[in-house]
Image (cartoon, rainbow over all chains, first blue to last red; front, side, top):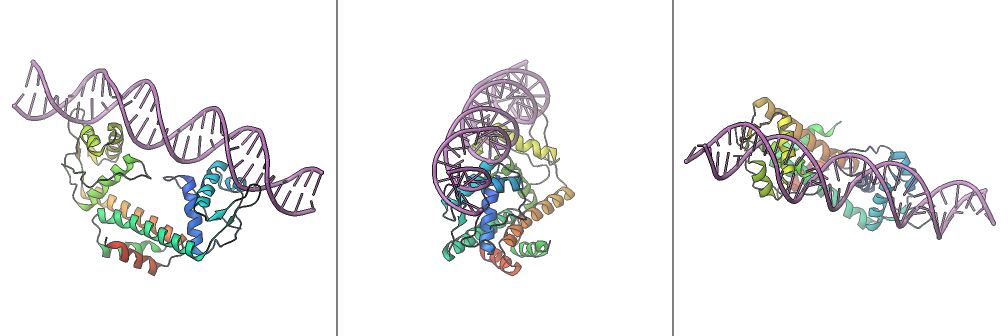
Length: 124
Length: 124
DNA sequence: ACAACTGTATTATATGAGTAATACGGTTGT
DNA sequence: ACAACCGTATTACTCATATAATACAGTTGT
């Protein structure tokens, strides 16, 4: 069963995207595996304190990326293979790296200082 | 005169926040200095292709942080000193570093690999 | 003085995100 | 068979973002 322990809602981006990213990061980290069952829309929305429609929107996007499979009436579960995991890993790494790099470059930060800042903030 | 050359609207976060961050990064980079005049609300909104109210919202937030000064009828201009610049530099560095670090840690990426990814994507 | 700007304010409309309350039909375990 | 789940769909509401069209008063340069 895919666990959402440790998931905390942050403002600044839509909740359904935060759920999508949480699942993708779990896939890359290896704690979400092929065949794992997902909590139902109702159960997860109650656990997170959000609306069932919000969870449904995240699950729909996961299904459109062929990462989960849903049948009306039954539980949804993960459908993964090595190619998909590799694709998501590259997608997320590039996205997060580029976001931080672009911002720091616009601030006039040097590569050396950027690396030093990442090193310094890594713990905690 | 503060220049908005190179500013490109991206979706995913409110435009008025993108303007706010663009100015703050310019302050840290040193290309926006104390006393610099800002383009008027009308001129900038026309240049960016957005609504004057959107620019006004960004300028209002800048004024609430005491980074610009506005008098009805006259041009707005930057009001900066070393303490403010240092504060913004620390604020932005910590924000961008923590965002990337948290995401990568949730992906199970090691500090060494994170540094290597930043190093690899820095050029481009 | 006066035209051309400036900042500021108001009202209205549209869209997307999120909530709320239901409803319908399929599956699963007992 | 049947109760208790499940996924899916619909309608209505609130709120923030963004746009649009004005309006008014203050400043600035000539």
